[in-house]
Image (cartoon, rainbow, N blue to C red; front, side, top):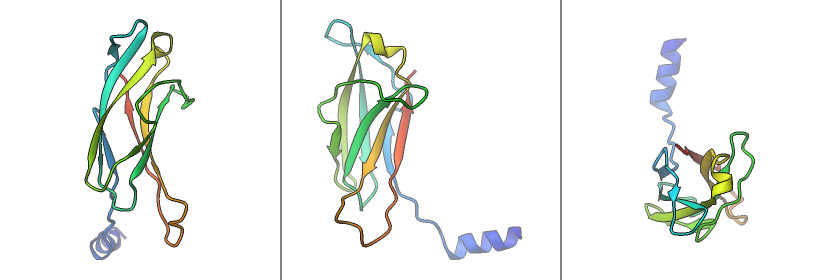
Amino acid sequence: MKNLIVMLLVLFPLAVSAHEMTPTYPKLTPSHLDNVYKTTMEMFNKREDVEYYEIVVFDKDMNPIPFVTSYTILQIRYLGHVQFDIYIRKSDVSRAEYVCSISKLRKEDTTTTKITSKICSKFK
């Protein structure tokens, strides 16, 4: 059975491509605004079929946390990257657990099966 699985993986390799978001463990630090914390993130798009990504901040139970960034939907062309800042109120910093990017598929691209991807970084 093990040999069959290895053979299938060799004959039918899985091409997995996604996007990357760094740092993996961002640190929130005080910003230039009173009672507001900030972190800087960078995203790299390795998906030819997606160029829009949504940014969301969640608590430990994956409930959304209010935050501010220049754009909550980022356009990143294939093999492109973008750097962005996230601002969170001091009162929400203790609840903020994850910052995630979620690929957004275009509605008109329904002729083929597409997979959305979600990448999360955990705040330190």
